[in-house]
Amino acid sequence: MDIFAGLATVLSDPILLGWVFLAAVVGMIVGAIPGLTASAAIAMLLPLTFYMEPLPALAFLYVIGKSGRYGGSIAAILFNTPGTAASAATQIDGYPLARQGKAGKAMKTATLSSVIGDFTGEILLILGVAWIAALALKLGPPELFAVFFAAFIVIGSVIGKSVTRGLASAALGVLVNMIGLDPISSTERFTFGSFDLTNGISLVPLMIGIFVLGEVFAQIEARGTKTALVPDGDDAARNSLSWSEYKPCLPHVIRSSFIGAFIGMLPGLGSAIAAFVAYGEGKRRATNSSDWGKGALEGVAAPEAANNAVSGPSMAPLLTLGIPGSTIGAILIGVFLIHGIQIGPTLFLTSRDLIYALFACGLIGILMYGLIGYYGAALVGRFITRIPTQVLYPIIFLTSFVAAYTSRGNLFDVYVMVTAGFAGWAMRKLDFNPAAFVISFVLAGGAEETFRQALLLSDNGMMIFVTRPIALLFLVIGIAALVLRVRGRRRQARDHALEDA
Image (cartoon, rainbow, N blue to C red; front, side, top):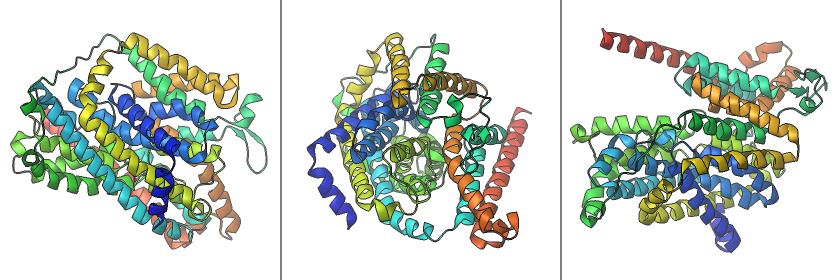
């Protein structure tokens, strides 16, 4: 199999293994810092990969995304502040365990569950992605545009609390992508006479602004709040994890791993939704459901397995259709393009060895962050408490400016980053969704290209999307997802109103 050739390539390259190890450490630390996400770290480190070979560059950011998801559990358990949105479900039982002096036991449970979930997702990706790519090769421009359309609707309506604000965020991302020259007629669009805007908005400074500066501004606003480390104590019995304690978690971990893998294949849903779905399903099936929320190990294991199982399958739509299933996937698109690798169905024909070597790096990265986390998660927590926020965030702030400028050596990119930073902060304040904005920005170029190609093939204009069965199917999926989401929100609002009454 190709994956064994990929493993041989990675294991025979000590420098590549060094990058994977560094990514495992960096991702874990970043994920464990309250308020700082793996997406922000990847966006900030993206310019570094310009000077690297394609495989180390992709592996470095890919593994940071994996270990960053896991690292969020450390903050959730120790600080009662999820390091990532996906870890919000973990804190429900993780923090009560820490208050009982069992933080070490909770973190070991989170580590094992994360590793099992991540391995499950990665293996499913390896086994299924080539098959999905073969099907994608048979899709024409009308079908591909319909897939893009469904992705826009799903991402805009599902991500975030508000359907209208989510769709508005997605529409804004499309609008910003259109700035520059028309790819066919070279007519200026939304440039307002500015020469700098004729080249469009660069992805790197935009993402650094949205994810990094936006988060720094949010932390400045919340600088009065403090987080305190819950000590895990010195009681070895309370912080060791025996097989008899973890064995009841295994059914939840296995079920949650498949829940997370399935949700990961659907663009826009993401690991946070997977974690809460798995937590709810686990509690429903648990024999000790009354203990959930009070410090049940199963309540830590289920969401951690699910949110990490998302990581691998979320790469499937990215690699086969060019549609990122998450913000991390959107950033990885930039790395592929920077190194001249065209993503999409033909990727497995032109760069098959590279992709399976990347999967191998993912498997090795899981093993590395698992070992580091199992024996050193508490040390990471203590290390984070010793970093003053008044030192950490100014360093991140200054690094953002350097990263934005070095991407193209253009001062205009710094202006774009600052503007995007304020926009990202405002989106958070107004409940708009930065993730939907960035993913739609990335998708817009491909959507426009396939839309125009479809119209050139058509003798009936827009009717080509209705007369092609697969295209129609995806259009219906997108509209159905929107209708179900709206109905679900109305039902929740009605239930809350009844509870208040």
